[in-house]
Image 1 (cartoon, rainbow, N blue to C red):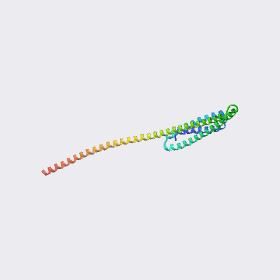
Image 2 (cartoon, rainbow, N blue to C red):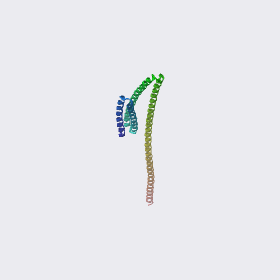
Image 3 (cartoon, rainbow, N blue to C red):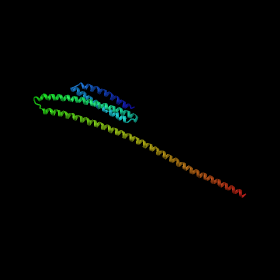
Image 4 (tube, one colour):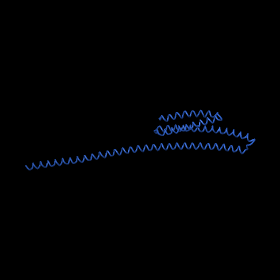
Length: 221
């Protein structure tokens, strides 16, 4: 298994444990302390996303037998990260609700003097719009990250296919070279066979001529 992947995995596990503690402590906080803790948690989530992307890149460069096991781990890490995001969203929502209640109480007190029912309605609508805008920003960011991961995956697959084509080209070049050598060997053998034919023909001709001469001299006597 890749030592690089193991290093990223250890970092993620440490970060996950730290995030879990911070989420638990954030629930009991309020005011500026809670905002500070949520800011630390969001920073940790961004670091966790970076580690997951690094692990994904490293896993896709490994052999298929190892790659499949690591990708299963990655799915578990992504699920864990999504759980943290949901927890942060829940904590943030409760924080926003508390802030909204405080603002409504203040508006209610001021209403005895200057505020009106319309002002309170506008305040609630503004709070709702703020919540919806925040959700849209988070969804857009999540889609951007998923698109980036998909692009990285496609590039890795294309790289693997390119390497396979290069290896195939090298194999074909070796085959062509072997065919050329074999052709040269066959040509040399053909030439030697032709020379041997002429040599044997000359020997046979000489033997026939010698036999004819011998017969001629015997008959002449």
